[in-house]
Image 1 (cartoon, rainbow, N blue to C red):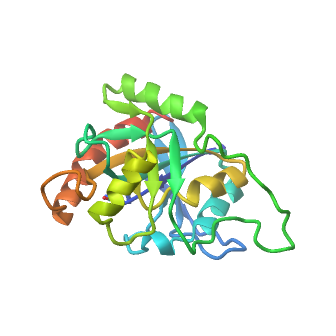
Image 2 (image 1 turned 180 degrees about the vertical axis):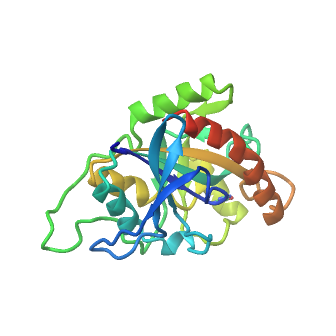
Length: 242
Ligand code: HPA
């Protein structure tokens, strides 16, 4: 059976599905974050990769995004659904909310953000007006409805460098820029997938109100607890992609 769907698990989503096989892949850009796992997904299968390694140890700015995306390409993956833990900037988004964003703003720096930065490789300027695949987004939203989950349609994810969380002033600026969510990992992941010709969409899990959005300080223990609770719904939705 050819497995053309890829899943990238983020914080809180290291092992979501039954593993059928693990494959160590090497790429011209080095090793991916972990072995890729062929997993059972409902009646079908997918390739799963833990973005931060398994166990979770690779910080967002140190993830080898090029190796990760190239490993999927080598396996023949044509579509990737990425799970991203994020902070909520829009005060309507409670902790635990699921969001399928339709836009992003890249505030990261110093990351290897393209396959085209050596002269032996073709220079490609990807079209990136819509950074996420509209068809894959629509599928996630439809499956969310079928699974009886509230999944918010659209939103703009600001991608910060991390690994620290933001200051309240930084989040206020992101809000003025139009961002409704803030995470650390959607870029350059989404752009590299586009360069590799792989359709890509993100399922964001709101782990906390972003800095300054709520009066309460952000608790890292609470983030872990929120993500653990939200993973049941994420697993249910993703397993329906199979
Ligand atoms: N900011 C950035 N990334 C995050 C956050 C946040 O508040 N919460 C979970 N990932």
